[in-house]
Length: 432
Image: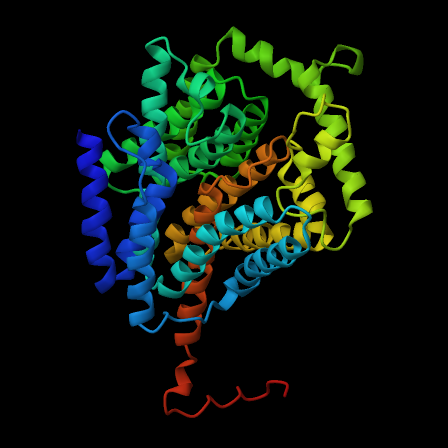
């Protein structure tokens, strides 16, 4: 019953608030996208259009406020790359053999891209970025908590029932990205209870790929751990936090986890069927890219292609690689646009992370959060198709929002003599 009350309050109360302040609607929309109330409280929350109700009110409020500010500054490249990726997908859908499944893909991505773009036009402060970060971490942390409770009670819910239609491998990508986000959010926090809450969320999310035996998730967590160590500010409190995370990780990783992880590096003659099938599927993706290099074979069409090949007893198979399946379905341009979206964020975050400005510590922490999350996600997504997993898009929005705010601040910082003063005269004897 608590879940039902929570869902209704956020849906209808949030819809009203969104008409006046669309940013409120964005927070609730992100929460619902990551939580999926119908899946979390499936016994009490009936299927409904909760996110759609909030979205309609949010977009109405956005329109009433003039559609925000479209000056993205340093974030322009990734933002327009995302728009181009979606637009290329629409063109590919128009040319696709199966229009029904192609337009299902378009509808699903529209629900992600439009809120992302809207969010970029209304984000105007670092306080809002912190709030979005906490919505992401808090929501994913709560889902991880529920899955952990179920697991320790003897029912591995994610493996036996899936969650919001996602299996263990797909959902692990969200947990990898969330683990990195929670760790760096904890590092950036100055309030002690919030810091420890973020670390607890990180531990809960870290454990999910382990008890679901997701090898891609395990590799992603390893990459996140290495990057966190490299990027952690060299202060005793940060080393302590990292050491604590390592101790917890080693404690949670039991013999079964290590046995599963070791199969990743097994020689060719000892690979299991799952590992061997991935290599075959990746080869089929390359076949599709050579067959239709520009527009691809159509959104969500690779499973049909795999089934028609006759290698899988006519059963449909995902490619188990987001990047290769994107190339197969949307062609080389589609893969390039999506890679540019994430890659542009990663490069800019790396540059921000290297800043030495003593007044820019919070921006460096946020850059570390986004950088580590997206790289961890990118590695995990190389072993599983995760087009519908939403946390990486909203974590990328944090990075793009940070770039936008940095651009706005740079634009307002003019040289001292520009405010009605003449430029200082050259020093005597200086070279002209």
